[in-house]
Structures are given as structure tokens and as C-alpha cells.
Image (cartoon, rainbow, N blue to C red):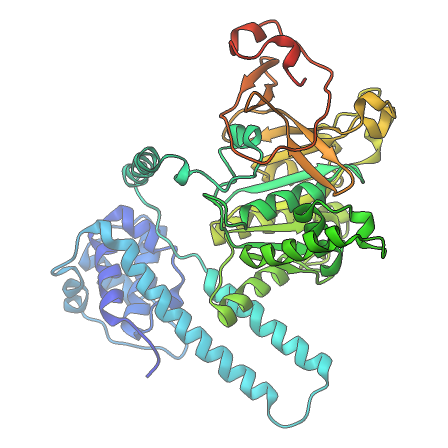
Length: 494
């Protein structure tokens, strides 16, 4: 007998007949969730009553059942069969739990069916490797679809609000432990509260601005054993190989010039630091995948594969970069393909309930403007990207345009969009030798510029190793004197 949950099928239908609000949601469920023929027919009858705005009493449902015809499926259903469904019902608040049971049973049936179909395909002849790869990839993609099929029933606003209050109370009780995933840049975290579940975050910039470097800085921090970190991080690199990514990580962690790693110009002390950095990477929960031409469906499949093989789920994923991805479905324009991939990556963040950080290129048109600081419209083939993203951060290094010595090492992370909070500009220090960014800090605190008010804002103090020293040309807002008694206007790094 195939897996089924007869009691849950009865309760879901009973609650639908007993409550019109639940009936409207149950009517939208896939009929394949119900295994028993009698309940498949009753579910279709409930759906027809909802669509036709008929009553939802037992008598109406019993009459509607007579109009339901399913090929190969017939069952005599009496009024008593329907009435029995509403006897001894649990509280309606438990509807989601019973729908989940139906979903789990259906998933088991679907997996069994997939295995049988795959076994049937493999019988009869020997296959070429390309054909085997196609079958395996198809199996993995279908497996992921089964895992993420969403059959949730909408919940009342009171229930979701109560959960939100509970989460806030937990955050108050545990302090920062309930915030999102920290970036390692305190001023950035002050604006974003960390990268949070279900968010699509876009890092954008012209070539050479440091998109990959910033992503690796954050990835290395989030996957490290530092407090509030130790998050399993997946880095999908479509631009660079695993070896190149690893070399950058070693350079960052060892403070050894990245250029020296590509030559034999390495001193004994540098070699010792590299060995120490390689050992430190053992403590990082970091997975690097350099498969080219990945599509959103391929990423889903690879995540599922690691979960099956290693019982491992990511807490955050990075994709470098959007314009190099392959679409799951070919479109007649690249803009539509990028829009589709952006939407799929946002859905991936929602399905896995994790932040998804994606790099994106900017149009070269911005270089024709006197002010080359990026704006959202500069995102290449932007289409739906601006709408799908929860946070958009643009990177800007003035030295690449001015060649002024005074601008060397300066960088800005410009928050162009923040769906649930303020925007602003976070000053950073760029160290090209190790391809790394560092926070700017004065007197043990970091700062960002609040764009709407054009004012400097004091972020919380942080503990970190001192980054390289750099002199900044200062931006002095009118209200800077009121920010902190320990910092005067001339010290602000804007």
C-alpha cells in the first residue's frame, strides 16, 4: 500500500465543511494530496461549492458529489459519509499541521513514483554518459520540486502577529543573537540588522569595484567560528574557479599579497601564515561550487544533493554573478531571462528561508555621467531585479575614476534599496594587496551616512583586528556636532 494519512484527509475536509474561511483555502489545495478515492471526490465537491458560492453544509456537499466525475474513479458517497467528517474535529488552528501531514504522504508517493519511472527508463539498454547525466539531473530537479511544493493554508493575521511578537521578545531576551547573519561590517549591519531569512540581496558595481571581494569578506566572516557566526555558507562562483576563490580566501586570512600567491615570490614567514590560514579554513562552514552555466534550478538541485549526501543545509548562499547564470527557460530577450532568474532566486530565498546574496554587473552608461556613483537604474538588464531585491548595495571606488592619491583605498557601499529599513552609505577601506575590504572605525565605533538626512550616524562599537590605516577627506554635516561628544566633525570619514 502506498503511503497515506487517512485520518488527516478526513480532518482537513471536515474543517473545510465546518468553516467557510478554511474551505476557501482547502479548495486551492492540489487534489493529489488526497489518496482515498472518497476524499478525492469530496475535495473536488468542496472546491466546486466554493467556486459557485454555494453553501458548505453537509447536505449541499453530498449533492455536489453527484456532479463530480473523475476518469477511472467512482465511489458511491452517501450523506452519512459527509456528516461523519465533521464529528469530533480538532481546533481549526491545527489545520496547517494536518495539511503538512498530507503533503508529507504525497511527497513519499511522488518519490516512489519517480524511482519507479527512473528504473523503467534504465532498463533495456546501456546509456551514454550524457544520457545518464540528463536522467540524474532530471531526477534531482524533480526531487527538489517535491521537497519545496508549497501547500500551506493561509493563516489569520492574529496568528502571524503573535509569532512576530514572540520573535521580538526572543530577540530582546537573547540580545543580538536573534539578528540576521552579520556581515562583519558593523555600520552595514546597523542599517540592515544583518542579512535575514527570505531576503534577496544584490551586490552591484562596475568591473573591478570589488563585488566578489566584498562577498568573500562577508562569506568568510559568516562561516567563521566567531560569535554569532558559524553559519553554513555556500558560494556559487560562475566567474572564477575554486582554486582562484581559495587563493583569495588564503590571502585575506593570512594577509599575504595575493599577487605573491601566483608566483614563487613567497617568504618563509608568508608560507607559515598561509599554512595557518589553511588550517583556520577548517573551522569555516564554507562550501565552494565553481560549476559554470548554473541556472536557479541547478543551484536548487545541488543544495538538495548536499542535503541528501551530507545532511547539510545552507544558512546563506552567494551567487557570483547574475549575468553569467543560465536561464531555466530560454526567452526571446536577455532582459526577460535575467528577470526570470531574479524571480527564481527570490523564490529560492523564500523556499529555503535563507538570505541569497547575488552579484550583478552595472551598465557602462554610468561612466558617461559626471557623478559616477551608481543608481538602481544602472543595473544591467535590470528589469525585475530592482523589484525582486530586498536590499541593493552598490560598490564605488573613486580612485578608479580620479586617479588621485588622496582617493586611493577609499570605497563606499551605497545601500540603494532597503525594503524594510533605511538607506545610506557605508565608508569602507579597500586593500588591493589582499583584495579585501575593512570597516572604517574611529574611537572604537564605525559610521554610516543616512542618505535622507545627509547626516553621520554612530553605529554600535565592535571588536575586530585593526585594519590598515588610511586618511579620509571628511564630510561634515551640519548636525555632526550633536552625534557624539567623543567625535568631532573633522574626524568623520565622509
